[in-house]
Length: 143
Image (cartoon, rainbow, N blue to C red):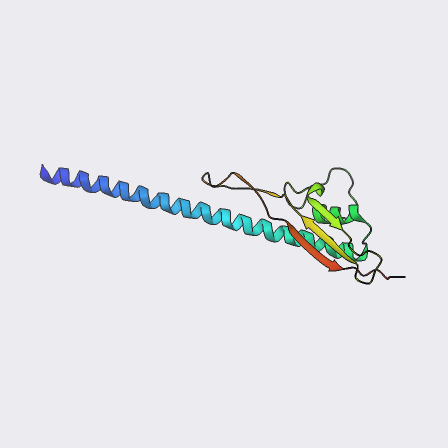
C-alpha cells in the first residue's frame, strides 16, 4: 500500500517538473524565433534601402523610381505588384537629395515605420522597426 502512494507521488512530481521544463523551453524557443525575425527584417530593410540608393545615385531626380526600387525591386510598376517584403509600402520610404547640383550631392533613402508582428504573446504584438537611413554620393556631373 505504501509503495503505491510513493509511486503516485513520484509520478506527480515528474509531471510537474516536466511541465516546468517544457514551459521554459517553449518560452526560450519563441523568444529565439522573435529575435531572429527582428534581425531578418532589419537586415532585409537595410538591403532594400541600399538597393534603392544604388539606383538613386545614377538617377537622383527619379524619386518615384527610387521608392519603387526599395519596395518592388523595379523602377516602373504595372498592375498590382507584390512588395519584396510583406507590408512594405512606398509611403514608408523617404528620398531626399541634399546639396543637389553641387559637387557634394548625395542621395538619402530612409525606410521607417515598418511593422513587425511578434509570435510571443508576452511581448507587444506589433513593433515598428527603427528608421533605416542609407546615404551615398551622387554620380551626376555638375555643370
